[in-house]
Image (cartoon, rainbow, N blue to C red):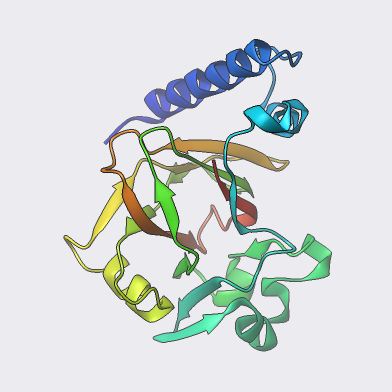
Length: 210
């Protein structure tokens, strides 16, 4: 397992690559900038050169996300009807994996039922706020049915998923990290992530596949 230093170095290299691409496309950018300032600059690239983008979650795209809680699969709206603070206006509709919502150190498996086409160039951008730095769970699953129950079951079954290298990073403001899929066999997958209600207790603002 990669150390925190190795993970941070990898993220820094990805940030440099993004800055380089922006400069090549005629957009002012520097490798010393944060992902938070670099990611929005992608919109300044001419539309003919923009990479394809699939929004799996943000405040306007919630319908395709489901979660496993107490052995029951819920949509975001269904879970919010039980725990109002899970996805509320007060957090700009970020997914709130806090112990105040679920209790201490619970792992909430979550997925998007929108299929994504993964290539070696594919990267997953996650915008989040985290109270601690630790290894996270980010997985790709193949599903014949595309249902949340099947995706989530496979995500917990050894041999039925592909683990991606991912970390929650402590931050006092929202940050965006990019997770590459360069070692993944090309094909159609579903994305699964786990929100853990320990010290990290992340708030996820958006998940986008580039």
